Length: 533
Ligand SMILES: C[S@@+](CC[C@H](N)C(=O)[O-])C[C@H]1O[C@@H](n2cnc3c(N)ncnc32)[C@H](O)[C@@H]1O
Image (cartoon, rainbow, N blue to C red; front, side, top):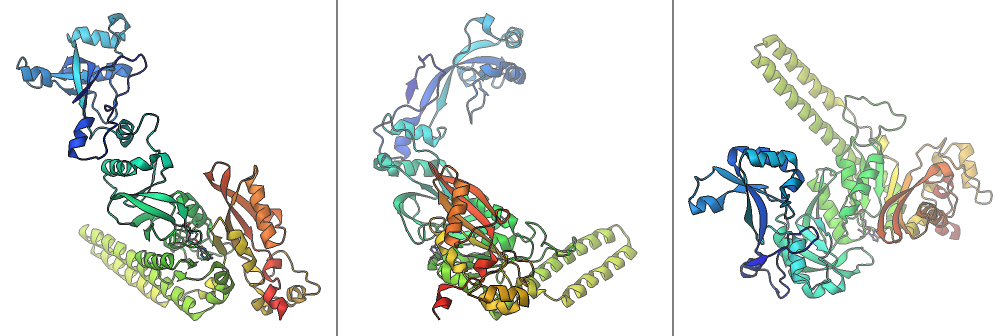
């Protein structure tokens, strides 16, 4: 066991001894991290301990995960006092030896209880030290322990710079050892899968198991971090958008990954505002949302489907495995398809059934309470009320029309999503016959193309597009909006567009989400294929 003497003038830092030669963490090498420190202490009557702790103030030894008052082992080992009569109150190493510098309240207590100033041996071992303490002791001087790491379920993922690579297994082992909720530590290698955006990984320590279970926004996700994209830092952005969607709306998630926008949007039907212009019954549960969720990565698609089932939102979230461009172009047709319409109809019925069952269970519990309160009449009244709930719900019809048109498109593929904006060109043209004659005549004449810019008078809403992108500009919001306008090939009216800073991804590189209402001129634009025919 090493003994560490304090000679420094600066505030004393409790650290394990240097163990630069250690190459493995095992039961033997862990013993090397045990260290003893001599600290000043007051030997006080056990009954007065709390008074000393209160009066000690800033002079108490305030070590994280360490009590400031400990058993008086030294004395009762030597047999000179009965066990438990005294306690040791630990003091900071710079506790003044000059009594005049001791705060009056503490000085008075010392003399009142004849407390003795003693030396206490404080022993701290491997189990006490933080991962940073252990790594600082092992890594070469000048190499600071790597900073914080991210986790996904039982997995910690690090992004080690080159200088740490010779020590990567040790670093992994210490992190694993010190975080009981972890089973696997991985290092992200520099190469990212350019198409599906997941990182190549190497296992540093623990189980070779990269399938994590993660919880976010009241939802559970299974995902293999070796084969699909996942970023816990996007949790706030996922939640921000889901809270923006109104009750009972339709969302198309173009780059859905394993579903962190799509699944919570369906799970949290009550989040967000009520549907604009729709009368709602405040005592009824809000209508379900419908989400078409797409990802080109077949593995992400597979996990998305599993997560839909895991969260019980089948029919409310419909998974697709298409290229984003094709998904956007097919989305309106898909919403009108029997598969989607029947799926949401069943899902709405299912969620109404669940709400009804919950209500009945509550009523049954209340009835039982009332019966227990010896009121037979009350019980009978409640009983007839319950059967009313059931028959009402059974005859309810599903308002399927609300799920016919999309209200939101989410496009979270910041590196290239803006390049997919041209897929909105003319997606509403197949529905032009639904427009009022005057509006239609303005949008269908390719020679005198003059569409209205607002959705007013349209038989369907124009959806909001939420597209993520990166900006390195001094003014990232303005830059991101200009980028979107360039790819849309039209100017967005100021009131119809916002830019939200999501996060810094690197020095001077911001992730931005631009949200705008799809301009009618884009929605009914003659697309390239149409022009050719
Ligand atoms: C940045 S991730 C975002 C995933 C998810 N929305 C999230 O927030 O975690 C982008 C996703 O787009 C998918 N992707 C990449 N290219 C695509 C394409 N051409 N069409 C559809 N999906 C694509 C990737 O597989 C990846 O899952």
